[in-house]
Image 1 (cartoon, rainbow, N blue to C red):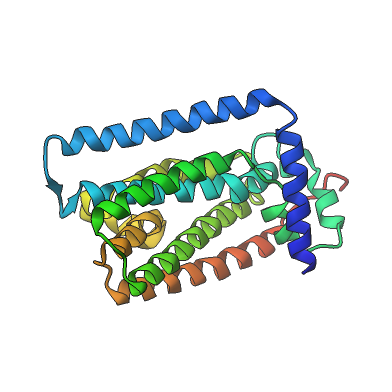
Image 2: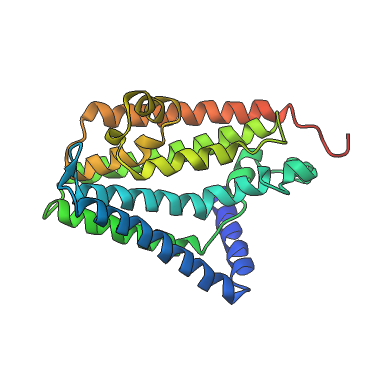
Amino acid sequence: MRYVKLIWRFAQVSAQNELAHRANFWISLLHSVLNLGSGVLGILVLFGQVETIRGWDLPATLALLGVYLTVSALRNLFIGPSLDALVGMDGEIWTGRFDFTLLRPVDVQFLASFRYWHPLALVDLALGLSVLGTGAVQLRQSLTLVDSLSFLIAMGAGVTIVYAILLAFSALVLWSPGFLFTWVFDALFQMARYPLGLYPGWLRLVLTWVIPVGIVTTVPAQALSGNLPIGMLIGSVALAMAFLVLASALFRFGLRRYASASS
């Protein structure tokens, strides 16, 4: 309960800081609408020319885009802000402010992961869920309980994978503070807005098992359509757990490499 209360307090403080400037809301809303419009428009133009692409039709691809937007919103809400404050430009590791984080009587990984929030990302979350709901309705009239549970499990695994990858890349900055590893992930994550089947075999292998951003969106979309093999669902959960354990171990090992600003 202590950590739950801390998360709530962190979210409150972050909301107060962001909502102090009204212009931030309107700028964020404009950015969200443009991001949504460009994604949906691209899909509509594409499927205005063809009916299916590698087995993916318009409703399934729309649902996948909704998953991508939802996961992106969750990342911007509570995963990205804290890790960016840690390893981004003018971050705590670069400036030496990480010393004060290490001195606090709370788990370091917890603070590095949940201290800062971006409440305006709730707008992106609402838009992403609306696209996801639209795609789900077009896929079928009603979802079975099994499909719904599979989707929720797959979404949970996808968000865990995103967090684990970003945590691992953040840990690498402890070895090389001059290189922003998270930028590499940003470039690769853009590929997750399209089905894995659209990519060539070698790239599909990389996006599935090396940096599995494809699993983050494709597997939940397949669960909504009822086309997800149970083995793939189990594999995605196992992969998420493995990535989380390895990323946490890498982060804690990297802490030993941190050179204090006062040393």
